[in-house]
Structure formats: structure tokens, C-alpha cells
Length: 351
Image 1 (spheres, helix red, strand yellow):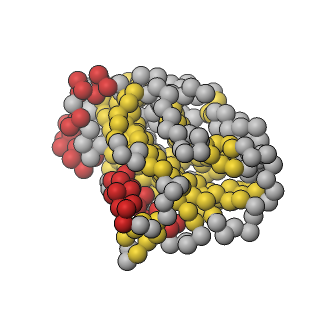
Image 2 (image 1 turned 45 degrees about the vertical axis):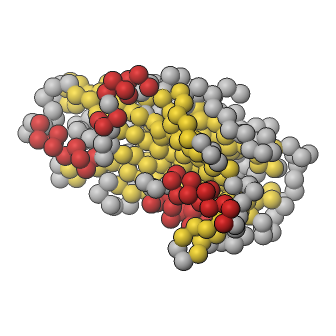
Image 3 (image 1 turned 30 degrees about the vertical axis):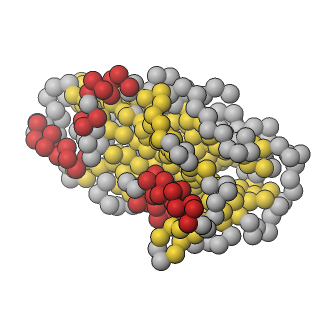
């Protein structure tokens, strides 16, 4: 099924065993040795520029020794180096992987990283700064702007000096940043069930200079993050956590869940305290999928890790469409016009 990458300038880095590639948001598939695939897509921005990394570790065993990830053979050191490269700018992902590899029964099967570049524009209306557009940028747009313009938010503090007394910039303005998604798959070799997988998903924002506050901006809405899967797997949650840009813990709410198909959370992405503006800088999630009896007749199914960004008051609802027959679109948000999504799908799950 053709899929297209979407969302805030998501920089998708597809890490293969030997090459690094940058591609457009057209359908991207990286075949595992057993013909399963991974895809990055977005229904809203078909021309979004994507950098993507993917590492297939089905034939390699990894573990943690003295706080470092090591492979089962010196011949696989190159794979360890590539794995470290994927999460070198994401200590939360590194910590997550090490935590799971400390469990000797878990086999790391693969990891994918996707990063996109996002641009949002604002206008002052009725003395309020309103987000009028949010888009994922194309390769041409990024080149014209310059990659150096997508700097960490800590380097953008000087821009705050241009705000007026109300905290609102007096002229039309725009803000840019990146969003990176990490999707990791493990298989539990010591499960009490017929088959059991662990899915972990991380989302990291960087570079945004948020010039507005929740109180002043009616266009700010909730964001959504979650999983969906085919095959009728039962599941239980491992974790959901996040950190605001000021280091405080973020709060998440269940938006929807279907016992054998998916689980989705909602969260407020902006926070204003005493005139300071904060955003959810990183999110860490995990679920375990299991089946007591295999019903797929030797076939595989897929799982989706998805992020939905909105820039208006949210009055719609989440609906999970995955079922035993397949994952499909995973889940969607209805009755909200100002939204875009990033979808990462990984296949090869026996059910």
C-alpha cells in the first residue's frame, strides 16, 4: 500500500546496514530478509522532505555490558556503531533501548528513525497571535531557508526580545523546527504466550521558538500519539511519559483504546507559566503485544506508531480502525481540519 510521509518537518533517517539515504515523502519501503517492510507516510504532505534511518538486527544479538551496547560478535561492531548513530542526539531513546536489552529474553529486531522539518506561521488577530498554518517542508523549501535556521530552541532565545509587552510579536511571524520519531521492535523469546512483541515509540521536538502562550492563542490544540496493529493481538501498556522543555513531567490522557487493535493518548503540547512558554520536548511510549494462540496461518501483520499534530481547538475524536485483518490507517482524528500526521509502520509480526 502506497504511503506518504507527513508532519512537522519530520526528519526521517532511514538507517540501513551500510548506507544512509535522504528521500522525499513518497512511499519508502525497506525490506527485511523475511520480506516484512517498514514505511513512513503522511496523508497531508506528499512532497515533504524526509531523511530516514533503519537498522535490521534480525541476524544479530545485542546486549548491554558496562553501560554500553555490544554485539554478539566483533564482526557486528559496524551495526553497533550505526545503532549509536541513530540515537546519538536522543539520550531518551538510548536509555530506552538499554533498559530493554537488560532483559535477556528480549531480542532487538529493528529500529527506525524519521525526522521531518516543520514550519508554522502566525498572525496577530484581535490582539491575539493565531497559528494560521502548519506544514512539513519540501527539499526545495528547506534548501531556500537553510538548514542552519532549524537550530535548537535554546539558541533562539534572542528572538524573544522582539516581543511586545503582551508577549506577542507585533508583526506576522513564523517558527521552524524538527520532529523525530523512533520506532523500535523487540521479540520476547521467553514469553509465557505463544508469541510476544514489545513496541517502543519516541518523539523528540527540537528547534521551535514558540512565540505565543496557550492563553493568547485559540489555535493551539492537543496532539495525539499512539499505536495500532493488525492480527488481533492482546496488549498491555509498558509506559507513557514525556518531558516539558523546562524539565517538568508532561501529563497524558487516554484518547481511545480498542482491546485487540490499538491505544492512543492525547496531551497538551504547550504550556505557559508566569509568561514563559514551554513545549513537550520528548515523549516515550511502550506496549507489549501477545497472543496465546497463533491464528495467522503463517502470515504476518503490521503495527503502526503515529503522531497527530493539531493547531486549533480540538473538538473531534480519535477512532482506531485497525482490526484482525490488518492495521490499515491505524487511527484517525475526525472533525478537526487543522491537523497533520506522521505514520511509521513496521511489518513482519507473526500472529
